[in-house]
Length: 300
Ligand code: SIN
Image (tube, rainbow, N blue to C red; front, top):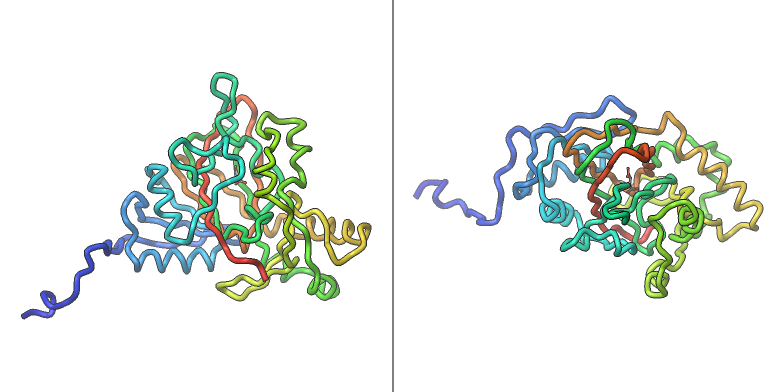
């Protein structure tokens, strides 16, 4: 019997993509994944390379992915269980794991969450288990605007003054989905009044201000303008002063990568390593993306 005939064949294993290349972006971080078609089952070897690149580069850009929502869900699930967003109204029909991010209105009604990402944040940091990572797939893009900004929270932590690192080392902060809710609700059609069941889903949580990435061991700042309300270990005025300083230091321009979207881009970022912000889209232009989020660990 030849060696080939005797080697075990796993019927579910896909063939690795010979053309797969991971190329760092011309930016402080981030990489482009070239030559991978996410509509096909992902070979274990390719999964391992994507997983490694995600840890190393924090933001991965997959170009021209002509994939269905079900294929986005299947790819996302390779990295862990998916989280269902509290805004059920903006789930994609038939795909509760997909949140529609869009400023489009149909028959006067918004079809998606149009102000998602209006403030800097890490997705679902208001949960006990915040998101490991998120994937946004471009469906419809505006002719101008609509960029997404990312800020590297490992580099932000590393660059802090030593005295500030020492101050914040033992401190914990509260994160709340409701922190900016009323402010957003006052000026947008996207924030319906939450039901009691929804409020119960988003009770405030407390996380360390400096978290350790569970896979790389690197430290990162883990507070954000959108969801962090107070440092629970400090009096109110001190808490406000330290948070204001950290919010500013966390998103300095030199820590950022700005993503200008191209048609069918899929962007996959690590919420344990970066914060992000939607830079904004002119009201008269249409923008629609599909988002999936992968559940992560309890921060420590
Ligand atoms: C988000 O915060 O998930 C949305 C970001 C964006 O729309 O660019």
